[in-house]
Structures are given as C-alpha cells and as structure tokens.
Image (cartoon, one colour):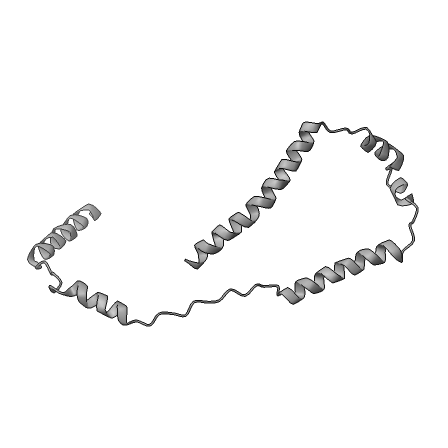
Amino acid sequence: MKENVDKQIESLMDKVIKKSALEQPSFDFTANVMAQVECVEQNITTTYQPLISKRVWVMIFFGFIAFVAYIMFVTKPEDSSWFTAIGIDTENISNLLNGIHPSRIAGYGVGLLAVMLLVQIPLLKNYFDKRILN
C-alpha cells in the first residue's frame, strides 16, 4: 500500500514539474547582485590583543626570579629524609646519573636540534603572522 502511495506522489510530482516553466534570472542579475555586495560596509578588522599583557609577563618574570632567589638565599637546605621515607636511596640515584656518559654524536644531535628549534620558531611565527594578516 505504501508503494502505491509513493508511486502516486511521484507521478503527481512529475506532472507538476512538467507543467511549471523554467525560470531564468534577468539579464543583468549578476551585475545587480555585485552592485549590492559592493555597497555593503566593510567590517573593521579586529585588532590582536594578547590574553596576557606585557606588563603581566614582566610581573610573572620578576615574581619567578624573586621566588628562585628566596629559595636559594633564605631557605635552609633540609635533609633528604622524605626520600628515604618513600624508599628512594639518594646515593643510588647520584651513582646512576654519574654512570651516564652520552656519546659525542648524541651531544651534536641535541645541539643541532636546539639550533634548529631556535631558528624555526621565529620563522614559523613570522610565516603565520603574515598569513593571518593577509
């Protein structure tokens, strides 16, 4: 029964589509649309404002420096008894770290990686800044 209803609807739609005339836009439709597009006001672009201002970054930097200075000069070194409380022997850790001797090639690789990062980060930032502004 549903198939019969679907066929009737489809035949009705075919008849309606055949009877309707094909509508065409006016000859200068594109020119009229483009004239209206040109009349629309251009939006003012939003200027970039960082989430954290330079003043706040300076305050964070000096706060960090003050914290490090406080740790180095004001506080007294404490014993490492909490290491032993959780089962870590500090002598074993220092002996383990003293036994590590990376090769020269590994040092060259780490150095080259650092230089590449220091060069590529400003280049990529510059590239994306230009891409965003254009």
